[in-house]
Image (cartoon, rainbow, N blue to C red):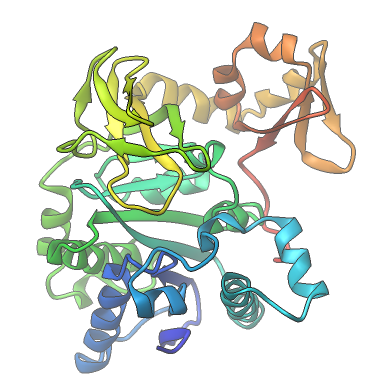
Length: 376
């Protein structure tokens, strides 16, 4: 398998859409969908305005139909790991994959014109309706509003080193798309539909040139007219050497109640700590994300946060005691835990910040909305 699955150049050379499939090797739907879309573009001689690239993720893992060989390729996109790519020559398997993907992305960003849209295609181990995950920047929200399917905000707070989180740090629009269950043919169809809708939404292709546009839109959105947004309230992390087993039968977005039995850990019961919806229940051997619990975000909160960010109300946070800017990182606030507890993390979310790490007994909140900067 080639790293670049396909490339289509447009007459105006702008915008540029970059789609990645198979960053987890057992999630082949995105790979198959990209090959189908590029074949249709070629067979039907579709004219693009901008450029469209398809990139293969973890090629070694794809060849064995496993999530990853040694480490999760979608958990090592940090500046520390990227620095290793410059300093080391003898790479582990996933680091070699990362290095090749990094070089391809860097070359595309250097060669092509923006704006750039990144799409990361995934599937899940449990049955699910299609959904989108985004870092909660206003640009990501605006682009995701073209798809009336459930959208999850802030998953990057609970995952270390996803590719799209790294991409977002440079101000680019980036959406994760979960198409369905790993082995379902419908997941491939959903990826195909999403790619066409995404290309049209990015103004890379004219809607009239996509023959089955109405079918793709209706089949993917199930005729929904409204887009529901959700936030993650809880994540169950599987510890090393823990014997974790999810209770069978749970589907993504299934309603759960407080104290409901969800899983077993070393044969001990794991109950829901609150009511909500089950999200990403783990039914595969590899991975340490046991399950999440999500709740719906009100439209009022979404509008309020958009207004607060446009009016730059986040500047007032720096005037509060216990809150200061990180002089080395302009998009970071360093917050005393007592202040964070008093204000509640939701206030920082409202103004566009996410809690990244706890360092030196301080919370470090990272701003989501950013200007475009050089990819490094």
